[in-house]
Amino acid sequence: MFRAEWKAAYETGHQRIDFEHRIFLDLIRQIEAELTSDAPVEKISRRLTELYKYADFHFFSEEGIMLDLSFPEYDAHRKIHLALLDELSRFILSMSIDLIRQDDLIGFLVNWFSSHTAREDIKIADFTRARIKGQE
Ligand SMILES: [Fe+2]
Image (cartoon, rainbow, N blue to C red; front, side, top):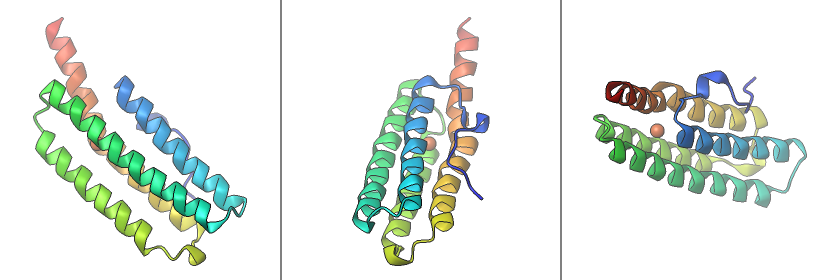
């Protein structure tokens, strides 16, 4: 079973990115708790919209960090962000809220979050570290 808990693997080492990722995971945890306590469908639906809006903000913020750093893989990373947002919105829209299965929903969200964080965002942090090292 997927758990919406912070793991060392999510730690990119970039302070701002990690801070925003923690908020993202916190929103998933909130949805998990609300599903467990049988919160009204409207509440879950609103929270999913909040999560989408936060993801949109977070990606924009992360793209700003990449531009500031002249990150060479900016274009490719931005394309991934757009695809991820599209995937998230399609997932949310396709959900028949009455049929929500908690494991499916949380599993999708945690997987969506963790695969990008551990595979792609870590590259921004690595690039930052290499640049700092090169300036020493
Ligand atoms: Fe990213």
